[in-house]
Length: 302
Length: 233
Ligand SMILES: Nc1ncnc2c1ncn2[C@@H]1O[C@H](COP(=O)(O)OP(=O)(O)O)[C@@H](O)[C@H]1O
Ligand SMILES: [Mg+2]
Image (cartoon, rainbow over all chains, first blue to last red; front, side):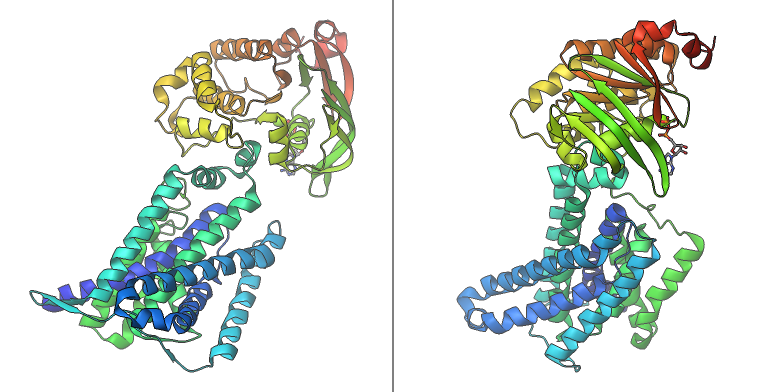
């Protein structure tokens, strides 16, 4: 039981990060009918953006009075640059192929992935970079379960981001246009929704969330590497498929489920196997329930 | 108001419109009738900018518009109610109406919606309902109301009576009259040629992407060719 609760808490923490990344996959699929396989790399680059922001903001972060502001700025910086990166990728790698056969954007996605990995490797080097915790660690104990203030920070800011996303998609004018486009592209164009603009916004939001996930990932594991985007991206993609690709609440639930399964697997079986579970699940869903738990393609249903 | 001259357009490599020309004078109801597959929907989609023009010209109120993106044409007042209604079925009725006014930023949107709900009373009690759960007739009302929320100057209607019960068809045609009486010019595409020719001041018959015949609505009603081919007599 102790192991169970502890691994549940740890799994939920990393699940939050997977959920943030999964949202980008699912939104882009729902609105542009495109699997952005470079999305994991945006997450990874986001972590490096965070590291870069840290190097600039070190004075701010090390003074106790402004540490919170410093963490906030690291997130803001990483999210903004990741958002721009996502928009640029869409503009130059996917938009020209909007009417091409579906295989074409998949191939450019692989190209973009390699490009980003190699740029990061050249700039920051191939070995692991240590990532600062950014906040002074405090450990809490509740019964037999221990957790840190960092885990609370990750969970709270993820939930905040997801609620903001929900409110945005539900109530804003652009959010309605996103759902309209997911529902019926021609009809959306006929009321004056500009497909390119809305797809850009979708990449912007999805990439900003991935960037936030990247910073959290770095803070949580304290080390980042240029190939971290591959595994995390694939797990988040699995989460999106598990929840039903295109389905926003599905991606959130899928992310948490993958995180928890991975946590429990690491606790009960072996942590060396933890990366296998996600793919085992991916194969199972694709075989038995390809539309996912909540049903596919429903950005419309928020 | 609208002048289409020698228009060529199509899907992919297939050419559908082959030299289409027609005119819609301001304030009138003009109809475009023709057999299934003649190119009626393609014509309207080309006017709305969803099908690209290969050759020819579309002038709207003196402006050349064939190169404008769909949203820019909506902004000018060319608004379409597509074939098969195409309402946003996973969104609520209210959200569908909001999206109709997507490009508007004036302060009259609320007033217009209230007015439209008087014109389409069946939508009133269903504002929070998912649009996809409504009947075909109700969806047609919503599709028309959504288009009107954009404050069109020219309304393109693609087979608004398709698949509706006879009583509902009458309602739809009455509504088209009333919309036109409010000063909105209408280009009506119909398979129901009888009703369309009755309501229209001018009519065009399209065949394989070209205008085959044209004339005043009443005139075509008694034209022997039209009678045989499109009125089933
Ligand atoms: N998206 C499309 N791709 C290819 N061909 C199409 C497409 N839409 C319509 N067509 C073809 O264009 C022709 C005209 O269709 P359409 O404009 O829908 O006619 P109508 O509305 O008069 O029935 C038909 O032969 C149809 O098969
Ligand atoms: Mg048609």
